[in-house]
Structure formats: structure tokens, C-alpha cells
Amino acid sequence: MARKHRAEEEEATIDMTPMLDIVFIMLIFFIVTTSFVKEAGIEVNKPKAEQATKQKSANIFIAINENGEVWMDKRMVDVERVAANIERLLAEQPTDVVIVQADVEAKHGVVVEVMDQIKAAGIDRISVAAKDN
Image (cartoon, rainbow, N blue to C red; front, side, top):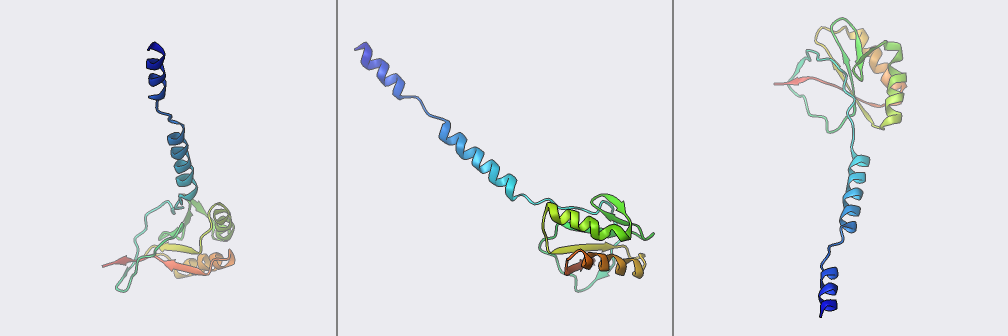
């Protein structure tokens, strides 16, 4: 009878291996599918727009302040280096939209230069950020 009691005790254990496998597979899935947003790094006073619409998804933001400084990925860059920086960011995480956050007081010429650099990097969809009312 002692043997029969021991056999029942051994069968009552729970194997945790399948549950751990599933948890690790889910962890890998969430790590792979996570997208990281490359914020500009500064806040700008965006102009108001009556017809502003929300952009679904964008991973790259470029900010232009009132002094004409261009910010990408939380650091200031030269206007001539915008295309190279976008290409670097695209290598990390591909996207087809770039959002330009230009200050109300930013000069139009700097904004156009930045948009030209974005086009040179191969991005055709450029959105300009604005405040909605």
C-alpha cells in the first residue's frame, strides 16, 4: 500500500514548462512588435488650424523653433544633416510619414529647407503639425 500512495503523490505535480514557454514567446512577440517614436525633443508653439486632422501613426518628428533651430531625436541638427539623420532613423525603424512641428514664429525658408531634406531622404508624405481648436 505504501507504493500505491507514493505513485499518487508523483502524479499530482504540475509541469510549469509549457506555461513558461508561452510567457517567453509572448514576451518576444511584444518586444519585436513594439514601435518607438523618435520625438523632436523640444516643445514649439504650433499655429492653429481649423481643418487640422490627427495623424494615425508617425515615428519621426522634426521640430523647428522660432530661432530656426532644427531638432530631431532630442538633439539639435543642422538643416543640411536632416536627410542623413532621417536615413539613420529609417534604418532603425521604417516609416512613410514624417511630422514637422514648426513654431508660429519659425521662418518659412527654414521649414521649406527641412521639407526638402525630408524628400531627399526618400519620404514622400510630410505632415505639418498644428493645434486644433
